[in-house]
Image (tube, rainbow, N blue to C red):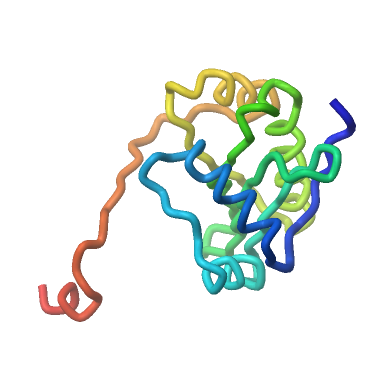
Length: 154
């Protein structure tokens, strides 16, 4: 494998769209590929960093880092880590994760959180190896099925 390079994506185009059409289904069978408008919002939102990994010029992975401030301090969350099946086991996920941690540290973030399905054994080993620690916590998800107006009437 040639040297993997990591960059923050700040523009969109066909190359990014085509890469996400390939990577998003490998991440989740229920996720949809973002539209051009949604991608533009992602890459231009302050505190949001869409990282892309390139191997030989080709996009082989992505990671999204979101940084934000709350009353207890600056925090960050890593989401949608996707590495092309052909590039797995070659350090792409580690390079993406380490760059995300570097960016978070540069923004004075206190903690970086992520979740990973237990079935993603290699990813879970990676996160522990680079210093992530499992937390004793419950993770809850609320799926919004109503409009904001309907929710405000409850």
